[in-house]
Image 1 (cartoon, one colour):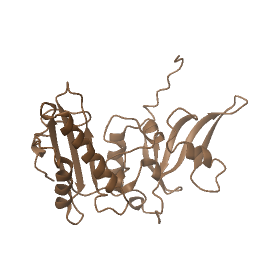
Image 2 (spheres, helix red, strand yellow):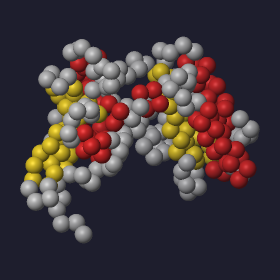
Image 3 (cartoon, helix red, strand yellow):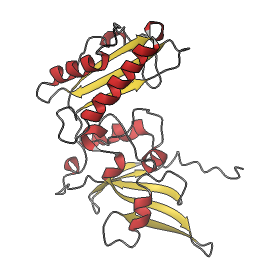
Length: 258
């Protein structure tokens, strides 16, 4: 039974904390606003999800996965500290800042917020982000620098063309490719794909793929991936002409383009 709802939407600041050498983000900020502020202000980003209206508070506490995660890890891999309002055994309310530093007595509380989910350990009010190994005081070097350009591609596979055997082959192709190209040194680590296996009622399965256009052989790597996904399926993909999950219609991306 829900008795109290706390609205954090007004706590949405995104700033740079020079003392901690980290970006501080309030828990009510939405992903779109976080990405916009980080990129326009300092040329950096977090490897989070693509659903723009999701709040950062719960997204981070659940791990935070997105299209840059194959190259840069989860959002929590860049989590330096978290501010949490907790209640102790005596019922006293206090605010705690827990960090990833090995000598922090509250480190376990930080660790709990690197995938433990939101609302389980207290009320999250702020996060601080700095990539592991980041040095110096330049804000533009404390987090991930996103690709300057990407090559994007999108196609649909009509359910009406799929038999059980073809569907099985398609699923195995996608799973097998990711299994064999999951290493941190893989040349494909800068390629990410979102496969929406929609219901038959939707009419189509949708595959969106992007790759950093600045890496060597980017277009060839993308083409090789798409060929591997469709190998042996025997269906010619069609353009993505209507929305699919978080994806908008992208009829002009049946051929890869920057």
